[in-house]
Image 1 (cartoon, one colour):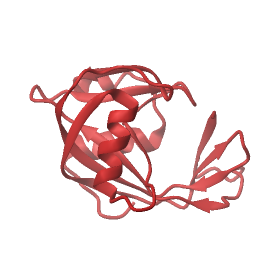
Image 2 (image 1 turned 90 degrees about the vertical axis):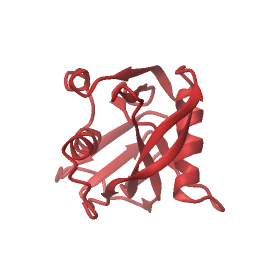
Image 3 (image 1 turned 30 degrees about the horizontal axis):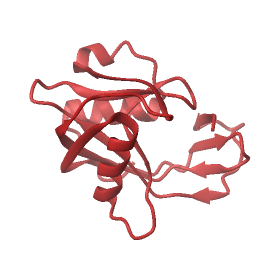
Length: 155
């Protein structure tokens, strides 16, 4: 379902939901990060998604990463929490969410990168290669926080 990201935009629609989600910075032994080009907005992003009832945030991260990229991971840490009330996600079905995401750090355990119904492409990139990829500001912020070691507790 296509979506539009609004970040600190006074013309953004008002949110009607607050949904907990995980995003994941997966880093391989060569220091490359796993990214996917999303089908809902065409932008490059970290794997991740909505937490389900009965699931931990780490379990959500592992499940979503595998579903979206084909790569099995182990969570090893946290990059930060991202709860900017000015970041709103508007979906074509009318749902408008305020962002609430915990970004986790993980390492790959196996599997091969492959697209899914949520991604056009999945690939490994060096941090420098990711600089030129189109992505929404909130994902760029998470990658920057990981690269600089900022590890924010609250955003």
